[in-house]
Structures are given as C-alpha cells and as structure tokens.
Length: 491
Image 1 (spheres, helix red, strand yellow):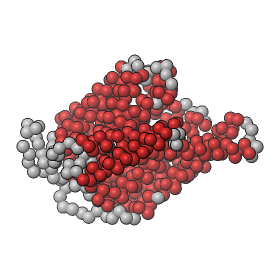
Image 2 (tube, rainbow, N blue to C red):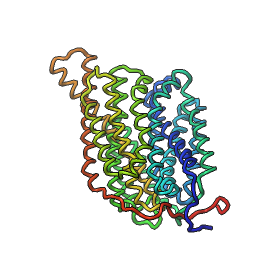
Image 3 (cartoon, rainbow, N blue to C red):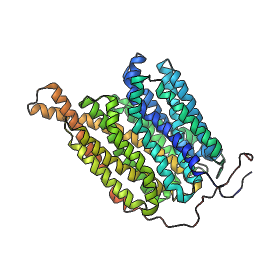
Image 4 (cartoon, one colour):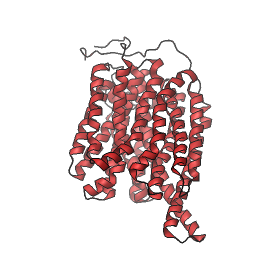
C-alpha cells in the first residue's frame, strides 16, 4: 500500500556517505584503468587496440544504460536500484580481478560499466527526492566532490599500485568502498516510490540502446577507423535514425522510459546546455594534459598523476564549500565566476612550449579546476531544483546520458583536432627549415595541443551569454519534497 505522507526525517550524513562512496567507486573505475593499459597489454600478451576495450566497453555501457535509470527507479524505488547497482558493481569488480583471459576481462569491465551507468543518475535522484530542499546544494556539492576526488586520486593511486603490487588491485580496491556504501544504503536510506509506471516501454528501451551504442562506438572509434569510413558513417546513420525514433516514442507514449518533457522547463534546459559546454571544455584538460606531459616531456605516469594531483584536489575540496555559497549567492554569480576562471586557466595552456615548466601547468590547472568546481554544482542544482521531485529521476538520467555522449564527442573531436593540427604544423616547421626529426615531432604535437586548448577556451566562453537567461529561483515555502512512501514492511 502507499501513503501520500511526506518522507520521514532522514539522516543526512549516513545517506551522503552512501552516495559519496558509491559515486566515488564508480568514477574511480573510470580513471584508474587508463594508466594500466600498457601493463595489461603486456600481461595478457595482446594488442593495445584490444585492451583499450576495457576502457571503451566500460564507457559505452555507462553511457548506454544511464537513460533507463528513471524507469527502474520509479518501478522498484531508487533505493533498490542504487543498492542493486552497487552490489553488481562490487561483485563484478571481483570477477575482473580474477580474470585470466582478456576476453573475460573486457566482458566483466563492460558489465561493470552497466552498473556504473546506473549508480550516478540514481544517486542524483536520491538527493533531489530524499534530502530536504534547503540541504540539497550542500548535498550536491559533497556528492560532486566524490566524482572529482576519484579522477584526482585515480592516476596517482593506480600508478602506485601498478608499481608496487599488481593490476588486480585496481579492481580489489573497489570491494571495501562498495561494501561500505551497500551497508549505509541498507541501514539509513528510506524505501520510497513517488509513482509507479504502468508498463515498461520496450520500444523506447530498444531504440535508446541502439542509438546510444551506435553513436558512442562511432565517436570512440571514428579516429582510428576514419571519419568517412563505411563503419563510422553507418554507425552514425543508424544512431541518428534510432535516436529520432526514440525521441518520437518518448514524446508520444503514455509511460515513457525517459521522460523528455523535462526539457520544457527552460531553466533545466539552459543549465543542461551550459553543462554540455563545460563537459566539452573539461575533457580537453583531462585528455591533453597527460598526453603533453608523457608524450612530449617524457614524464612517467606516476609523476604525471602527482603533477595533476593538487589541481584535482582543489576542485574536489572546493565542491562542498560551493554548495554552501550557493545558498547565499545563488547560481548566476558562481557560474559566471567559474566560467571566467575556466577560461583564464585554459587560455595560458594554449601557450605551451616543449619545455614548459610543470609549475606553470600546475597553476593553470588549479585556476581552471577551481572554475570548474564553482560552475559544476550550481549548474546542476539550478536546473534540477525546478524539476518536480517525481520527475527528478528522469531529469538526472537525461543529464548523465547527455554528458556521457558529449564527453565521448569531446574526446573524439579533440583527438582528431590534435592529430590534424599536429600534421599541419609539422609541414610548416619542415618548410621553415626544421630538420631534426624528434624536435619536429615534439614541437608539432605541442602546437597541435595548443590549438585544442585555444579552441576549448572559445568553447567555454560561449556559456557566458547563456547565463543571462537563467532567471532567479523564486523562494518557496516548505523544505521537504512530497513523496509516496512505502516502509520496508509494506514493501
């Protein structure tokens, strides 16, 4: 049976610990495997193109299954969905650690991505449905800190494990974090459902899976296959057709898998556009800074992680503070300041030379990442706080799905742009008389990276005029979201 009472009083910190560790372990799995690819290639006696599917398969599964979280959260409750996702992620991590064949490792990593793709949007939905409204900005700040802390610590931590233990511990380390999160969810998160969908949208499920997987594979492999190759073009065409079918289906069916009508909320849509722009600019630094340090300057993976660690820690620890500032200042001032700081930190990175100092890069990344922390939480909260609680699951699923797609898009575009511009600069340097092959290669790659950072600066500045259209949120009475609650006994 159901009741229309408000959610019972929740224990803020135990729930946030559960959400923090769940999101942390999911994002940690994304950031640690990159540095292990050469080790895995040697250990499994395979090629880099094969072992890269441990990363590609994970990212594809995360992006593909994020859209279905809204339906399953409504059908089974977000507590159960989050709990199952955590348990599945933790169990599959054990299977990954025990894998002695590359095929099984890729398969288990892909399955791990399925569970990881459900963890993040369901965690966001829980915050907007369970946490009292006046505490939501702080909650989002704490939760976002976990998503930033994982990639901050991931490369350095992975480098240490690979150097002193083995790659298996990249997966074993997920187990204690996963178990802590599972225990906290079971003990302290209330069981609730706000609405129960009448039927499962099978057509929507099939079309979104085909559309997402086709577009994401095309984006991730287009650079190596060639953007005009038959495989790439076919995937984009299939993805576009099924995406159009999915959108049509979700706008016409009575019980959509992913309710796209949340886009009718102008504030949510505007913040989603800013989030996309921020994601694209964010990936330029995540992708190209390690490439420059390792491929141009010859820095080891462990030292690369240590160089980038301070800026990532600044971003992670600033998130909860930004949550408190949000309640006092609102979205506009924080987002505007953040965008300007991101641009101020990114532009100097377009002036890199082969012998650029590490301290120069470190401070650029500190300024840049501080701007990201000032922008990310306010953008997310400004859009989500106007979405009715019963629609927040669909809004968070859509948000994460879009960001996954555009994150893959950013990686593909920036990788291609760097390669193309490096080739162009190499020809220019040869014409100008540079004959040393190593100097030519390193200088051309550096200039190509500079071009990408310059483009990323222009991209992030596009968000500034959009901020002007984000209207202020009117104050409402009451702090608790309404919900239909089922106690564990009633369930």
